[in-house]
Image (cartoon, rainbow, N blue to C red; front, side, top):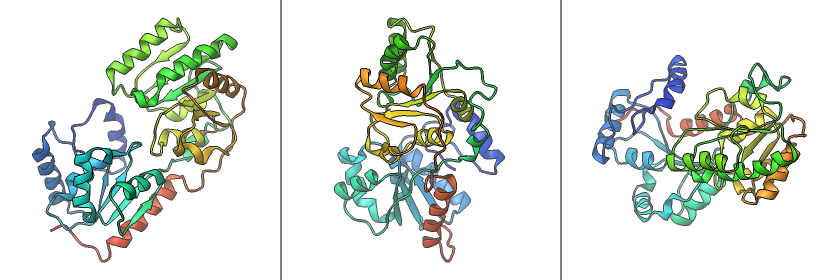
Length: 327
């Protein structure tokens, strides 16, 4: 795995897990400009001579398709917003479109945006993200598996950015504690937007919720947190197809999430409430109701890690036969 940017501190634990599983992770030592990014990727490709390249996210896919190599490339679109509203990105994609053998969207919305903004492509496919449901199995019958947590804990996991809407959750939680004083709220995530993170802390203080709301950074024990909590909140304004949402579904925890298209597939699952999370009253009522819901057994056919891996292997075999190496 190669990155365009230096490793962030909060990735150290994940990198250790990947290396233990035999995955080599390559990060540049410093933040490079455009030419430096191209050189870094070119060195990686020349060193490893891959048979197939999977480029995740818009900028990575643009850079790798500028390289003078013949390796088949698949671009995976993860963005929850339409990147092609940026005119420069749209022009670049129109020039480089056919350099990708396959264009993969994690949701149908990604593909629809591409067709509308760029046009057709010989291989457009949707491959949803997958979740390793087995890591949640041990918590199915143990709601609080050794993790100290309040009995009525609501949790939101996600980066601190405006699009994740932690502020809406705090405002709705104020309504929850008016009816359920024992309720607690746990917010966890990478602090990507420091100003937004400060706004969350400020709102908690202004509403007098310091004793009932915990605002912390990223966590690696997601399965344990979901197992120890009673409700999972996800008021995102936009998502392509959230792994965090899938993890919550796999854990069986009651879910209250925003009514956006990418969450629509889960509307029929037991214990899932999709509401207008910008309406604090409605959001608060949904959270309060969910506190009394039991955990659910949900079948995530098509959304498991195995399903996703199989689909990616199908794409790779289509374009890497017989095997070729980079020029």
